[in-house]
Image 1 (cartoon, rainbow, N blue to C red):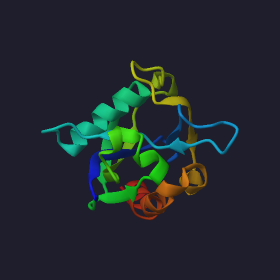
Image 2 (tube, helix red, strand yellow; image 1 turned 180 degrees about the horizontal axis):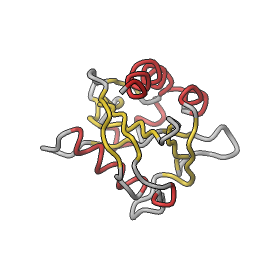
Image 3 (tube, rainbow, N blue to C red; image 1 turned 120 degrees about the horizontal axis):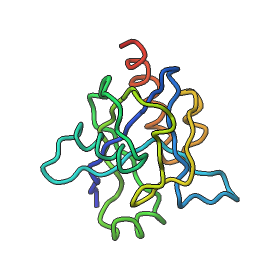
Length: 157
């Protein structure tokens, strides 16, 4: 089975080019917490850029941001075997993502992770070079690519 769930990812940058990450609700604090940038599925007949703004609103309570640039290619990751069976009823091998860099236009006080369907239990701004050290291992390769390509393009724009 090689079925990938289409989704979007958002590298949200503040005015100091720090990147927003959220600590997943399902992360185990006894182990290394699982932080990630906002991401989520694309609905049927939805454009990726619209999905990105919708997901931002759903996950952090605001989409007061503008798209700086997008990573032109779709990036894939495979879920570990133990997650494949439980997530999305085993329908997907992993996710295929379209990534966007966005500039946050608001104030930190606008960010509210206590949304109607929360995904994060905490959030913070971090340096782009620290992303790989906080993300779960199966997403590290994508995050390295995003730091080298998407982040670099975003801060030049």
